[in-house]
Structures are given as C-alpha cells and as structure tokens.
Length: 227
Image: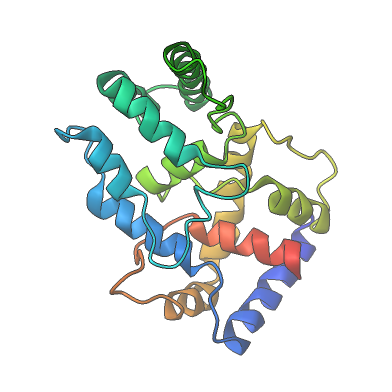
C-alpha cells in the first residue's frame, strides 16, 4: 500500500463527509443493527429468526439482486434441514477455529444442501446457492463480529486497491487476505478521530449501528473506488 495515497484519500473522504448530506452506505449500518437485534443461534424457529435478522427499510440489495438471491436459497435450505443449517452457522461463528477453514466448511455444506435440494425438487431451476463468491459470508461474519470483519464487495475493493497502489491484488476468493487488509486500513481510519466523528454524524441512533465496526472500512474503500 502507498501510505501517502491512503492519507490523501482519508483527507478526501473527510471532505466528502462534510460536503454531502447523503449517506449512501447507511442501509448497511441499519442492516447491521437489525441483525444485532434479532440474531439468536438457539432460536426455536431458526428460519423465522434468520429472516428477521436480514431486513432493511430501504433496500434488499445486500441479499437480493439480478440473478442473486442468497437469502431466499438459505431460507429454502433452512426449511429443508433447519438443525443442519443452525450447526453450519454455529461453526462459522466459532472464533476459536481458523476462519479460512470455517468458510470452506460452510461453502461445502451449502454445496451439499444444494445437491440435496435439487434431488428433492428435480424440476427446480435453482443451480446456485450464491455463497461461493464470499459476499454473503463476509456479511454474516461482519454482522456477527462487527469489530473483526468487513463486507467484501470485490469489484469496489479491487478498484480501491489499484487506486492506492497495491500491485499484488487479492483475488475474489482470497477472503482471508481481504480481512487482513481491512483490519490494516481500519488502523489508519481509527487514528483519525475527526474522520470517526464525521462518520458518526451521518448515523441515526434510532436505526443505525453506533458502536465500533469495520463497516467504516467498507465505506472508505467504496469511496476510494468511486472517487
């Protein structure tokens, strides 16, 4: 990373926060708070709890888009095998285990569930579960442990890394390296108290997550990619 470029982008980002009323990434902070309010791995009705944990009053773009519906597929998996899926998340969120192995096991289980689903419903057109690309898994981890993980939105992250002078770019599937880069960027951001304060002013305590979170890193690298 080019430290001079990072500092320049931090300065530019502060000017951006001061000059605009809009907070384009605010829906992510709302969804994080909704997750924190609803997630309960021991819930009797796991499907209902999962559905309630991933909601937003503004948009569903984090889990639904053109040819992208991972939440719907996970709800189908939960309906088919609720206890199995519960244990998948229990393992994914076990911070005593290596994160790369946790992610690999989660994805393997999704593959297995998709095969089972297609066997039970041979006429289905579903052939993806949308968890191999790491966006959803990064969201699960970010929402469960907001001080440890950030959202992995690869196209924006890749462009941001190019803009700050990274030559050996992480791939779309190198999520553990992404988490390391995100934590490094967070150190720079947290050192700038003015930036932290400006960011908090964009939040509404009634709906947004107000505690420390690496979502700030997500906002920052998206800004770098765009501007």
